[in-house]
Image (cartoon, rainbow, N blue to C red; front, side):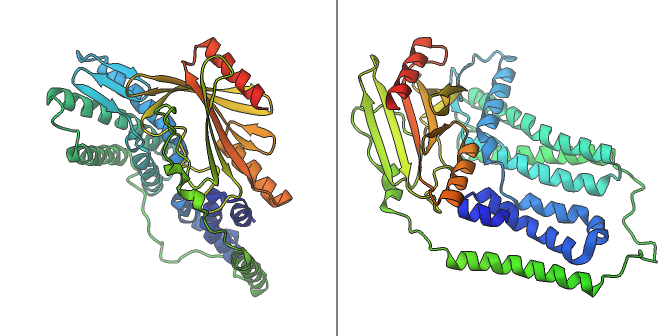
Length: 396
C-alpha cells in the first residue's frame, strides 16, 4: 500500500521505503515471528539502503560553516562569515553542498549500526556507539573545512583548493573512521562469541496452513504492484523540462532558483509596491519522473547565493518561508516563497508533497506551483518584510 501511494503521488521516498521493507515483511510473513526475531538486525539493516540524507544538507552546511568559523576564531587568522561564504585575507571559501558531509554521515551511521551490533550485546553501549557514529562525522567535517581553510591560508591558496581538496577529505575521513573503530573496539565485549552450541536451537515447525496464506498474500501484493506499473500510462517529459535553462531577463538580478522540468516558468518585475519586487513562479501540470514540483534537486537559488537565515510566516492562504540570501559579492536578498497547491500555500516541501499526493489520489489532480518573491533587504528589515507581505496579499 505504501508503495502504491508513493507511485501514485510521485513520492519517491515512500516507494524506496516500500521496496526495502518488502523483504523483511515477506520473511516475517513466511517464516513467522520466531525466525524474524533471530534475524532482526539483518532484516532491519536492509533499511540502510533507503536513499535518505539530502533533506539535511542545508542544516549540515550551516553546522559545518559554524564549526569552521568557531575554530578559526581561536586562531590569529581574520575571518568573516556571510551565510555559507567564509572569507579570510587570502581568499573566499564556499561551504557547498558537497562540503556538507552528508555522504560520510550516512556511511558512518550504517557502519556504526553494524559495528555496534557485532561488538556489543547490551542495548546501552549499542545505542551509545550509534549516537557517537552520528556526532563524530558532523564534528569532523567542521574540523575538515577548518583544516582546508588553514592550509589555503598558509599556502597562499595554492594547496587544498583543487584535486588535493578531495584527496585531503578522503584521507581525513578514513582516519576519522579508523579512530572511531579503535575507540569502539576498546570497549567491545570480549566475551561475545558468535557460534552455535552444537545443538542448534529449537523452533516451532512451520505449518503449511500458515505458509500458503502468507505466500498468497505476498503474491497478491507483487501482482498488484506489477499490474499498477503496467496499466499506468507513462507521461512523457514535456518540452518544459528545459525551461530552467531559459536566459534570464536583462532586468532580472543575479538570483536564479533551480527548478527542473516545469511546464511554465514566469519572471516578473513588480513596481507597484514602492521598492522593486521580483517574482519567480514555476507551474507543474502533473507530477512525473524528472518533472516534480517537490524534489531534493530543487533549490531556492543556485550557488551564486547562500542562505543566511530563515523563518516561517503565516500568510493569506497558509504559510510561507522567509529566507535571507547573500551572494558572493555581498548582495542581500530577502525572499518569501511557498508551494501553491490549489488555493493553499505551504512552506514545508514535505507537507506540500503529501498534500499534492492526496489531491492526486482523491481528486485526480496533481497540479501545483512554486512561487518566490524577492527584494533587496535583510531578515531584520521590517520594512522589507512588510512589503513582501503586501505583495502576497496583492497576488491573492
